[in-house]
Image (tube, rainbow over all chains, first blue to last red; front, side):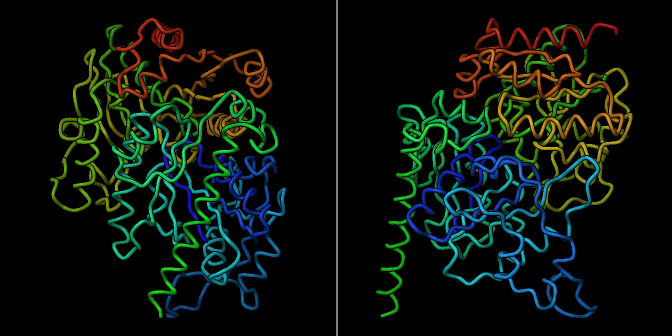
Length: 265
Length: 244
């Protein structure tokens, strides 16, 4: 299972992705949580606080002129799996966490680290680990290949006019970008949900809504203090909603695997 | 005067930019509101509705697929990729597109280049920036006069805002105003005061009526002009417009 979270800035992508990663890990899955936002976010929601770890620039090397493919590749002798062992940070519940690095006012440019990040994701074996990815907010990055690893793209939709508009744009962009994608690859999760929001999001975006996460004071307090909702409010409706989302994603994987087997037979 | 509104995604940049723009216009300024976000939503908060906002987004996208003619000048950009918003504000969507033509005023100049090169004369410019610090890293001294840094009392937003504040200071990008948005209680206030000990944080209380406006796709100034949160942002507009 490889899931990428997209959506408007501040929708709650990191909060949901971080809790989801840890809940899946508690069920014994090998989980890799990846953050492709140059601003901090997912590490905080995993319960790690702000992490300054970065993939070093020399994890990649420039290809010789005339060699096909992208300009950089992982350093000779470094496989994607080894790179992960070396550069990932361990988060609570045994989740491994990988980011390319974070933008600082006067920090080193991240271009080579970003290449390394992409090459590691591309080079991992197809079945394991399970990947939960957090993309930057807005409608820009997903379509430059950053969600290429994902078999499921979750659009996180806060039930505001701007949130719905962003979700419609993301759904449209994702379908034009990748016309060969399996139907159902793009789904929605409602964040900051109240009452009948799930139905409203379904109607206004045309997306299958596979989860609905209510926000309450305890989620706000967790966000203020920089904690995972799983640690700050494990018995909150929000935590329960993410657990239900985890179940739903696992069901979808099982259903897809069964369909594939039937199709193959 | 040129104002940039920056901060993490979802902290209320667009709401802030919209209330500032309309309040400045009510005070007599000629205001251009620039939507610099690649996911442009400023129209909704200004009060032109989501249909018109979506139409403007569509125009930008049509540049990419070649069905929309380019605007040859700044004036025609504002004309073609803009819309009249309430209180006499002119909204222009200048967000980056996928396939810009280098040097073209309507797509080949980044928002930060536009802010630097266009002669705005007597116009007041309120620029709603893309989330994060990307645009700030490319902005040059003199491109804007005031940076309004919007921060909500969450660990992540504070972290982004501190990085943004460092950039503003290091690159001398103008006067920095820290706007603490969605403040609910003393714990929220304490977090912001600790994070920005040097700054005089403008405090905007959390207001359910602003959230209602966002849900309904209406301008907070139209739905709830008396809301405490709206008044606090309007008061900031007043102090920015007053001569220093």
